[in-house]
Amino acid sequence: MATTHSSFVHATDSQAVDLIGDGAEVVPVVRDWGNGHMEIDFNVAYKARNNPFEWFGRVPPGKLQNYTAALVERYGEERAHDLTVTGPPHAIIFPNLFLGELNVVFYYPVSPNECVQLYTPMTLKGAPEVNRRALHQTEGAVGPASFLIPEDVIIAERNQSGLQAGGQEWVDLSRGMHREYEEDGKIVSHMSDETVNRGFWRRYREEMAKTSG
Amino acid sequence: MASFELMQELTQFVLTESRYCDESKYSDWESLWTDDGHYWVPRSAGMDPNKHVSHINDNRGRIHTRVKALNSGTRHSQVPASPMRRVISPIELEAEEGDEYTVGVNFNLTEVAVQSTHDILIWAGRITYRLRREGGDLKMASKTVVLVNGDEPVPNISFLI
Image 1 (cartoon, each protein chain N blue to C red):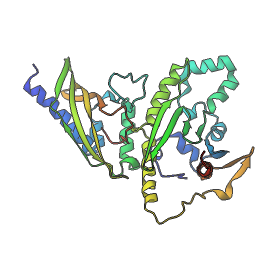
Image 2: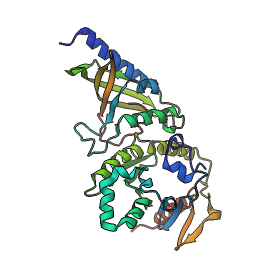
Image 3: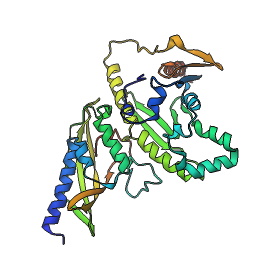
Image 4: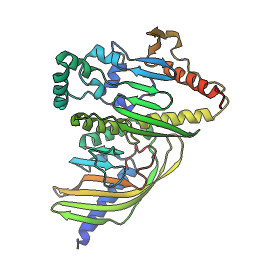
């Protein structure tokens, strides 16, 4: 299933395709944490698949030998394995912090037609193998010449043109409303649903409606 | 002093490489690379690509991935490809070592972002090539592009710069 625009990830070997494709047994979910914070929880799918470092671009564990050995030494085989199967969150902290596994991104809307994004890889103390890969992965995913964000940027720019066309009072963000469910007090739904968009704009409206001073 | 013939040959290589970029001849462009090619666009000169995030820091494998993406037809940020032309300065042969030549040029590139905004974008900077003779032909062992505004927020660089 194409969750958004079809992407270059569909033209190459990628963990994303497996995770959201028709053959996937457990599909990632979106979760509205409340107050405009949200996540795509890929980890439910990673846990079901149980492969080390799938969240880290499927790096073969042999390429992170020192890191893996250090984890085993500290946590034991079983816990170390579990720790490598799931990755850091893929989340938005309202209003402008994006955590994309090992990518940290701040986005600053500077005018109605311009948004600047600052980004960096998250690095770990004493884990040069991980950091080398994190740097390379950030360049491949988040930068202006990377393989993911430029695609999103173009689609966002096209959306912006659409919004400027006028004549429409509403933007429909109702996708998936019929199948949302509650889990631990949070609203959860299929990965392709606009649950998180609704969560973001609810908080935005709240903030903008506050009277100043 | 390098021979006229050598300078002509190096110039020809740089101009052809530039045209392949301008005309989105992705596979032709890929064929110019050596097996250990390195395509690098740092944020600014003097940065360490192993420590600092680069705009582009492609080893040969990622150069191939980049070309594959551009050839896929689903690289939305380059569908359709940006019309663009770059003006290349006369080349400077900065170093010559055995079969390898280090060549520097300044460039000025005008791109039209036809995929969405239709903005006209100006890119400028210095390109340093490391060209190596392999079996008689010149190949590109590295291409480093230092933009004048590399340390500012920049729009998509999903075309070949």
